[in-house]
Image (cartoon, rainbow, N blue to C red):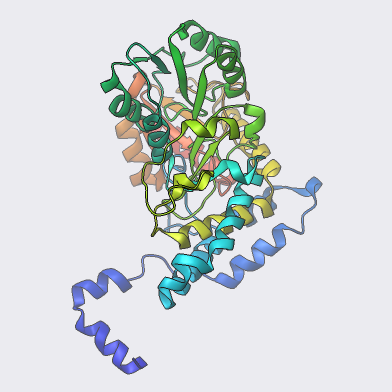
Length: 429
């Protein structure tokens, strides 16, 4: 089809359809500028990482005009370089669908698996490339043949995707789901470990636990809880949706049995891509959610055997990991701490605010939750967006009445200054 005929065909689709497909939302992106800024990131030595460095990181992300996006814990953006790579993979697939869906990308997918494994300091034979955390938690919860009276510990702050799978797939077997209450502001790690210790009985089979809770950004001590659990012969399944990419993580060191994460949050991959880690010796417990030709495979790949799937997005995950590694996971880990500290320093001592996230660096990182005293959180969230273009998440459960702010790597200290001024303005109204 030549260019003239193609344009006629597009017009024949109808004004309403073409408008929805081709009307741009954002201004044109200067790709060359993004690539130049990305290249310059690698020219910094470890000792010279400053706000200029992080401004160049921020330049990789393009948001709607006047939007200040502090809602990464809900869903992260992809940097332009990852968007472009993923688009090329889609174009390649559409140019020869059967070739790339069933064969020619096999080695490329395995390279992505290896890159993800290296990011988490594990073997590529312990990583399945799935869709999201919810799928991973469903796969884990459905795999076990538990019997009447068996117990699973799922604390009260777990995300619905970490509780509903156990309720749907296991409660019908008359097992008991134990829901201990976590403190909102624990003094130390031991206080949290004690909660789980007191919940364990001789019937406990599994602890299902968030690494960082969705509610108030509290980070739970996975390593300590895993050790305690294994001493009692208990398996540990971790919801890592909010930690994968925010922290520097060695899953062998954490020693959990399973870890599920969505890479489209803090790893900035294309949407609908995730990771499931299963410790080698714990893999025999797991059964695939779906079966197709090749189900006899004994490797971890049996857990991702969907036949036809979104390979451009999976390969886009590889591009996201490359972007992440170019910046450096230790730099990103430290940035989480620095932004948290900077934000807290700007509102500390102001009686109009109450921070509802634990202050210790062992108990929280780049998610901070703040109440504006005397204000309804839903109204404050609306005012922040309408007056200042700030998007964040209101948290109403557990009597928080607080705003959840995500300090991802595209957030600069200047952005935090703007956020704090906005909060203080609304607090004074």
